[in-house]
Length: 427
Image (cartoon, rainbow, N blue to C red; front, side, top):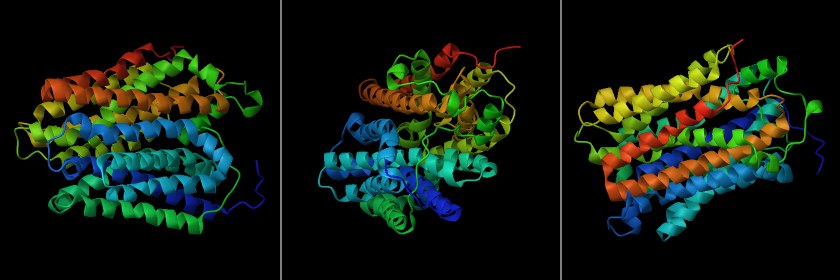
């Protein structure tokens, strides 16, 4: 590996972090905006002909497939290219959100969006090196909250803009998507101007730095000199990885669908002209942001049993989502309140769930690096499979059956939490 003698200043590093976190928010806005305009986009490419839900969802399938590949390859790319060039690649891929608008058929559009997702997913992995290198220890808890909330911020921004400018946005989807995607190009240019290279730090730290610090101090995460070799072969034999990933896939299914696939379908079938899909997205994401803030308070105290906490929150997040879907045709305001509570319980438990691998016996950063690469890949693979199956159910059995499938599919989160080991047994 090439050794880099000059390291950028902390101010330069924080600027690079800001560019990358903004790029991830832009990725979220492009994904959610494209999903909101899926009807207008398919009408354009298929000359107004009605297409099956499977065709409408193809873009979302490919985006999640790209996220699977990106999570498996990101660390390798970072080591080979170093942070500056690796981020150039990721940000260039993100620019395909702009190029996709001018493709001549739906399949080229889909491939371009897949490349966009590949870039966006790599960014969130690369950003850990910038946090490790440039963010002071006492500020890492703030950056962890920013990273956790970044996707929700992007989705909420889209929801607000669609509420205000919906008629203008759906009038010509290409102009709308140009408006969202032009920021990808601007950020790519900013990166070329302001970025600097440095030696990457390839370690997985807990998304809540306060938790990670406490675990280090209590010697529940081994220091590097105690590292035992752990390979991908070991990872693929590790039962914990499969149980954790299946639960994570159920969580993603519950969370991502109300942001990209469900709102339009629910609005089409709701017998209530007052229901607005943008409000569904907005309430889930705002609830998630509040849940993230709450989780930072909860995780300051690690002395509670994990599984009862996660099971209770899992029941609440699925239960409130079910109630929200039940009320869409009769009481829009009540349904929005239920969606917000569902989003809150999703994210108030999220850091606790992600904390479980860090609490395993004799854990170390090498093992965590491999485990989290597999977790993200498997989790999104399971989500993609569920998303495809949901489209089949919607196409062949109808809306009510698809909602039932969505809620039952999400319940695998609770099932696999029950199977996970309790990392805080009773004393």
